[in-house]
Image (cartoon, rainbow, N blue to C red; front, side, top):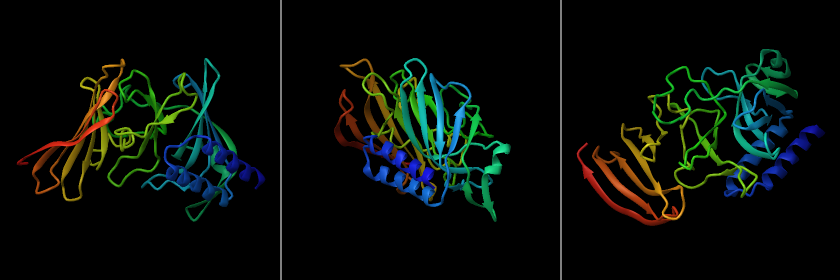
Length: 300
């Protein structure tokens, strides 16, 4: 019990020092950890057998329960991901709100399950092989991965066209029609030794960026066009309507990087007529300067 309480306070202190942009998000994540502590769970340590994108990666994981995905026997819960830079030996960490990984058969003995419901687990360490996405550039096509998809809790990829890989977390739980929530973090650099969450549009809503792409029925998913420097978030309504938000980027006049230039919404949610609206325009620093510039409607 003392060990479990210590785990909670260590985790809580790390969260408190993270300088979050959204207090509500931190509160929710803290409540998740409290929930695990009251269940008397012990932490599980996952160590990846090989370096990942220049980091040694380990995970401290608290099981919350069975993963709420049809046909899955996996467990899920919040986890602390620790990244050790191979060159500098600097340590960075990220809280993964909903982590899961396949448990080796020999480690299932540490779990207590009653009537199909998770009860508790003992502490143990598992060495796991990292599985990376099938393609170097995820999200370039809705169905590029095909079926038989394997869940990947995190991976690295450049999503803001600056040539530097961001860290992308994938939530374990999927939506009803496929797809899963994603979180994106800027990697540590000379300005900061920590991963920092990207909270501006369109990076704060990468639903189904990886997990959603293989499913043709996914209500929402995100794709990237690296040639034209656009990010598109696709969505659907229950009444059969479809829509997408297109974010266009262009090279900044003052810096050698791409900044958000324009956001356009295209949908047929009203009367099945296709409506195209330029929602916002941005200056060379990515700061919004115009809202609802113009709209046009055509027959769908």
